[in-house]
Each structure stands twice: as structure tokens, then as C-alpha cells.
Amino acid sequence: MPTARWPAAACAAGNRAAIFRRGLRCRTAATEGDMLPRLRLIKPPNPLGFALTVSVVYAAVSLAWILLSDDFIAAVARDPQQLTLLSKIKGVLFVLAMTIGLGVLVYRLACRRAQLANALLAVREDGVTGLPNRRVLEEALADRCTQTHGSADEFGLILLDVANLTRVNTGLGRSAGDRFLRAVGERLHGLVEATELVARLEGDIFAVLLRQAPTEGRVRGLADAVAAALATPVEIDGVALGVDAHIGLARAPADGNTPAQLLDAAMHGLQAGKRTGRRNTVTTVSAYGGNAREPLEREGALRKAVRQGALEAWLQPVVSLASGQVTGAEALVRWPRTDGGITPPGEFIPLAEATGLIGDITAFMLERVTDWGARWHRRRHAPITLGVNLSGLDLQGDGVVPLVRRLLAEHRLPGQFLMLEITESRFMQDPHGARDMLEELRALGVRIAIDDFGTGYSSLSYLHRLPLDCLKIDRSFVHQASRVSGRRTLFGAIASLGRGLGLTTVAEGVENLADARLARDLGCDALQGYLVSPPLPAATFAERYLGDTPVAVPAITALGHTPARVAGRHR
Image (cartoon, rainbow, N blue to C red):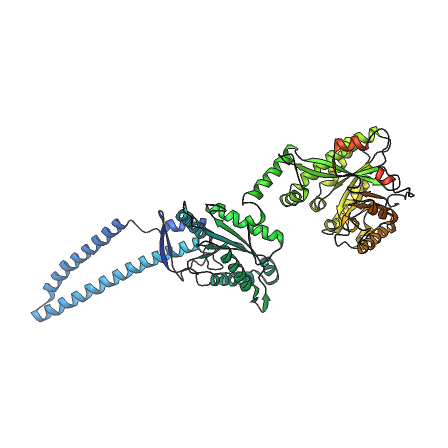
């Protein structure tokens, strides 16, 4: 067990007394809850009662010894010289007896105090690293918050997450992982001043309490010091291990004035650093625009919007390059703001995936699309195909197929007028499981599209075996492809791949006539983008494109006629 990283001291906080003893350990894995009954069992007796008991026993033994021994000596001694000798022996025996008794008493008291200190250490010290634990950190934070309340004094809290601990535990075992954590704790302790506290919060997370104001210069200096210290590999069982860490910083009182608020703020800073992929750098919540409550408030608002049906499904038309008419649309989720604006999907879709709300959003979009598709199908001679995006979590779950089957049956919509779109990167997370699900969906008549093709790392062998109908070429290859030769080459290669596989090819992100003309010349079947229309509310979309007579899009008809190619792969 390592030596504790906090000095011997006695401190009081309110009515609490904490004893810190260097070198004392409780060699068990007991939790704080387990230790409290033991603390009650080893609680010392009442001091006054204990003192009176000892005094009475001492007085009784002494008086009995004096009275009995004097009578014994008087009866035995035959002359003054023998009386003197026996009196001396009596005194020596009395001192020896009292010394032994007092020694046993002091030893028992010392054992009791050691047990108490040992038990307190088990409650307040991390058993792996020897550092203070969360309880000590929260008490120190509370004391510091009390000291600085109402003043201009500032202090800071740093949380450090050792990102590669799981890999160490898996590859070398938990014993090696414990030694790895001890080495990290020792390095952190060596970086800070004696007045600052280094603690192990939980699992792979360490905390550093900066008792002085964490100025920008000091934070940067600490970040550089942490990065330099952690850059040196730690050798465990002959293996040189790097230390990958994400670091979050909270400042008081700017980010909070209670221990819970500061811990939350530092944790949100840490998570913000994780999202950016930055390693061994200090990240604050304010650096990413917001306070510690903002992510939780946004999550709560999104949950409320999903529960109350406040989200909206907008439609962006897909136009056939052969006829110039709208033959389909992609449904895109929108989250209206209270100020009349729209929250971009890029701001809440990752949050929905992280919190598990994406499944509810997918169900909402499928419900809307199948309802609209069925109503439009019944009133229009040339019905359109509506597309809905599936997330990676949708592909990993088992609820999409039953949901689609139920919705198609309830709304009496033929499956061929529903297209489910997946990105190649999400498909490659579990290609075998995703393929099985797509086969089941295809059996319902649903069409399948690969969305944003070219931005991921899909295997062409998987692409060939998938039950696909449509390949949508990402806008990064289409936008300004008529002017940039490199994009034009990649655009043409992807379009040729789609044709070779017998798939309908759709060019996404088309914004000008030159790119539309290039898409036509490269053999694409359809296009989608702001040249035709931005995403529209469903009512506006229906009014503009779904009249009794099919409406041709002027911008596309101006390109001229091109022969239509059979859409989809023959099976």
C-alpha cells in the first residue's frame, strides 16, 4: 500500500473531527457504509466515567495493598532489619504491579485510538492511490466556498479523466491498472503546491483543488505541466504506457459557489474536451459557450419537445433529371425555438443520440412520413417516395422493423413509397447486424438508400451485398464540382459506381445550374439541393409540388431532356 499523500494533522470542520495519520491503513475493501458500524463499536467510553472508574480501582487496589501488606509484614518480620527489607520489597512489587496495569491500560487505549484513526482513514482515503477521496474533496470544497463567500477571492477545481485506463485493465489486468493509477496520482501530486489538494474522485477521474485564483497564465502553465508530465510513458510490467487524459476546469464563483456546482462545471468542461478530441489540455465550460447547467437544460428541453410533439418534420424535394418533376423528398427533423428560429439538427441530433432520444425522434419522423405518404398516395396519380434517416442506434436496436411494419399497415401505405436512409459510417459500425435488418425492411417493400456516400469508410464488398436501391452522393463531392476538377473526378467515379451496381443515383447539395448539368451529364438520376428548394414545412411542400397536375421544376427542365434510366436494382 502506498504512503499517504497528506500529512499528519488534526483538523475540525464544524462539529466534525477528522484524524489524518501518515502510514495508518485499514487493509480491507470496506466501504464507508461498512465502516460506520465499526466506528460505533470502537467509540471510546465516556471520558468522565472512564476517569472515575480508573481512579476508584486504583484507590481500592492501593488501599488494600497497603493495609494487607503492612499486617503481613508485621506478622512475618522478626527484627527491624527484616522489616526494612520486606517494606522495600513491598514497595517494589507495588510499583511493578501499577506499571504493568498502567501499561496494559495505555496499550489498550492506543489500540483503540489506532483502530479509530485507521477506520477514519478507510472512510476518507482512496485505497488504491493513497490519495484523499471524494468525501475529503467535497469537505475541502465546502470549506473553501465558505471562506470565499461574499468576497472577490477565486479558486479553481480541475478534473482529470485517464482515458486509457480501460485499455490497461483489459490488456494487463486490474493489478497493473491500479499501479498505473498510483503512478498518475504521484505525478499529479508532484505538479501542485503543498497547499493544494490532489484527490481521486472515482474510477479513472482525479481532482485537483486550486486554492488560489486560477488565472489564465496559471491555467496554461498547469496545462503545459500536466501535458509534459503525462507525456512521459509509465512503465508497467515492462510495457511503456502513455497517459491520455481529458481535463476540465471550473472557476469559483464564476462557474458555481457550491461543491456540487463546481464538480458539475468541471465535469462538463471535461466532457467538452472529450467531444473535441483534445488530450492533455485544460478545457472550461465557458470556452464552449455556456455554463455548467446549459447541457442539462438543453437535454431537458429536448426531452420536453419530444414528449410534447414540438419537433417538426420538413421536406426537401428530390427532382428527377429525366422529367424535371418532384419524385421524392427527404424528411428532415427541425426543432423550433421560442424566438421563432430553428435549432440546427447538428446541435441536437448528437445530443439525442447520446441520451437515447434518437429512437423517439426516428419513431416521430416515421409516423409523420407514413401518414403524409398515405394521404398523398391516395389523392395523386404519381405518388412520391419519402425518405427518413436512420441513426446508428436505430440499426443496433430491434424496434425499427416492427415499427415500420405497423405504420405501413395502419396507414395502408405501400412499402415502395418509403425510403430509409443510412450513412455508410453508421452501417459499418455493425455491418452484419445492419444487413440483416435491412433485409427485413426490404422484405416489407421499403426502399433502402446509402446517404452521404463517400464521407465514410465503407467496404465495397459490403456495398455490393447490401439490399440497396439508391446511392446519394454527398454534397462535398457535388458542390462546385463543375469548377473543381478533383471533385468532378470523384463525383464521376461515384456516379459510375452507382450505375454499375444498378442503383438510383442522387446528387445532394446542388446549388447552381452548372453542377446540375454536370450531374445530368455524369448519369445521375436525380438531384437534391437549394437549386430546387430548401427544406420546407409539409404544408408548403404539398401546396407547391403536389397539385392535381404534376409540376415540373423550371430550373431542371431548362437543362434539357435526358433519357430516364430504370431506377433501382433488379432482383
